Image (cartoon, rainbow, N blue to C red; front, side):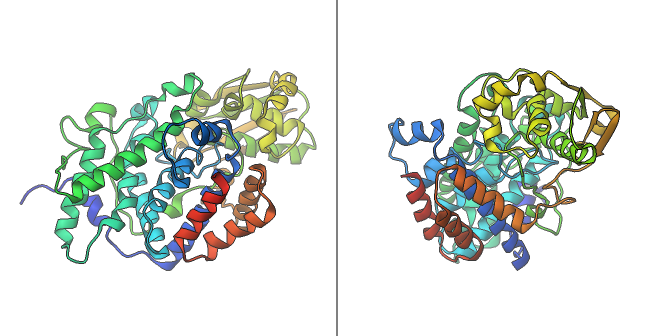
Length: 422
């Protein structure tokens, strides 16, 4: 018998039925993504995509650029990636009925996380997991719409495996964009979706991709990983493992924000010097004592904790230029260091310890994680706040909540996006 590849096993794994509770969970992630898109609709990126790019874009094409712009997109901890910005534009670009949309999204989350969870720290050191695993998630998200009643299961596995092989052969997304200003992080999302859509079309037409694109001798693991982790196939759909982000900053700063908020409640204020202990990747990504731009501020532990000390719960306005200038003195009182015990728990747990005035608070998990979930009401409130930040009236927030949580027509969502982004 021919050895079964990981992508073949993944294709079979994706064919199992989707339960109603998981569909309802997916609706919350759809609302969360819609809020992220709405919040970014007045951004410079949105303006340039809408007005300057010499391409005929529809609303979903524009939304591809916006879902991760404010750093509030959903996140899966152990794979260290953000599924929503890749998956939802993939399904909305070809949605038929709402059941298909939800099923496609759930399978997109599953494939993206399944592949991303096998990447090791060597991979994450250079590669943006959302991009490298995103192409696999987008293939799975597109796949429901290419299925046909005349296909056999084995034929479908062959074709989807080919699509996985095609996208995996050009998978990429380097972190160099962290060190320079630009739109590359958003382009990673657009590229993943466009590449997957093209690969699916070719695979449906019989073009064959490599079966062993992940584990083969010159496959993705060999090229980008030192010790790839085993791929697992759990019974529960992995969308239930995905965290919602309550604050508009890099997720690596959230444990420190959460611990600082709790310490401030305990002490009444955060006066004097503040020290953050956290895991190594949080330091690597977010040790920025002197942010100069909004993106810098969103990736600055020092700025995030200065916000908590001065204002309390971070708001989007607290990462804007006026706040960056106003909080310079408080940022100077914040120091950061990596701590072995917290790093040892990562990435299964994103934690931090914050100390001020001789008192400390340590959190193993942060708000929005499955262990400390953001409530349905909290997710709705977050979406409403983002929609308002994007300059839309409250009735548009009502519309988004109703269509995402109760709707049955994907085209109504596309029309809403058209109204928002035209």
